[in-house]
Amino acid sequence: MRIAIDIGPLHGHRTGVGHAVAHIVDHLSTDDRVSTTGYLLSYRAHPQPGQIRLPLPARAATRIWSRIDRPRADRWLGDVDVVHGTNYTAPPTQRPTVITVYDCWFLEHPREANPDVARAGRILRRAVDRGAWIHTSSDATARRARALLDTDRIRAIHLGPPPAITLADATPPPIADVASLLDSGFVLALGTTEHRKRHPWLVRAMAAADTQAHLVIAGAHGDDSAELHRCVAALPAPMRERVHLLGPVPVQVKNWLMGHAQALAYPSLDEGFGFPVLEAHAAGVPVVASSAGSIPEVAGDAAILVDTHDIDGFATALTDMCRDGSNREALIAAGVANLARFDWTRTVDALVALYDQAVNTDTGGRRP
Image 1 (tube, rainbow, N blue to C red):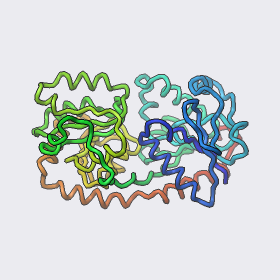
Image 2: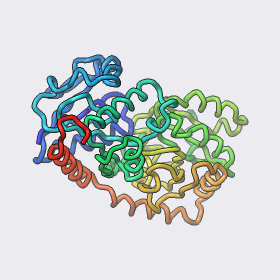
Image 3: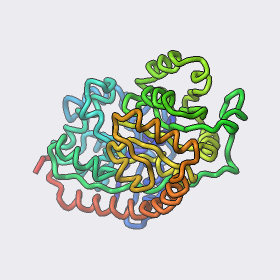
């Protein structure tokens, strides 16, 4: 089976979506049931030999595709059996199509999404109307996508685990006094600073916690960056000095942070999967998270889950972890056990089965 797969997320800053796509592409490339050709819609990226760049300006193409199903990508993708859009959208095509949707935040809150993301939602809906299949990374997202997109062509397939943390390949963060992080301990938050990640909320929760531990937030800048900086600036000086906003960091710095953190804080309003939870499990770091989206599904019993709006409860849980609370070691052991639930081979087996289903039930671009 010949698969055209979107490799756009592999270029630029590597987010959780990028890591997911990298693993999927790598495992598909060694699977003798399929052959893959990577495609991307970007003039900034540099495709490798054998990869296809759709010869369209990305912003112009998405603006058009959000309104009409032209131009189709078939002329550039060639004779493939399935098109797999790995990042919420796929170009118009007459081929059977699978689109991966990680979370539904942008569909439920379109007014809070930036214009590019809002257009992605419209393109996704048009693809569903043409008969596209949706792959979600959790059952929680599948249930919401089924209602929001009004389709039963949805399959929940868990992703696999993130790479193991390698402390031998770790670099301390660019903080003047790294020793203070180790002496006082620190809570780590990872992820793009966008509204649903709730980093400003986390700053307030950490300020309410009964601990002298630092807070380190690492991730790309997003639509909540300005609010995060305002929130930190409003803190009393002693607390403000214990908050470190690193922005995007290389994997070596992330490895160091995960390897030395007292706890991972994950207060998101929504998640489609949540790689940082599994990264913390692999590193032996306890997790304090909100009970939102797919987090309970992925974390299982290996995290302290707090009601989404309970800031005092979140602060109490962080205090407990920073003080080596009695359930800390139990959480760490549960995290290691939880990792066994996730496997990339099983992920790809299920995706190949979904490709086969898409081919065998294709309706020629029409909703059944």
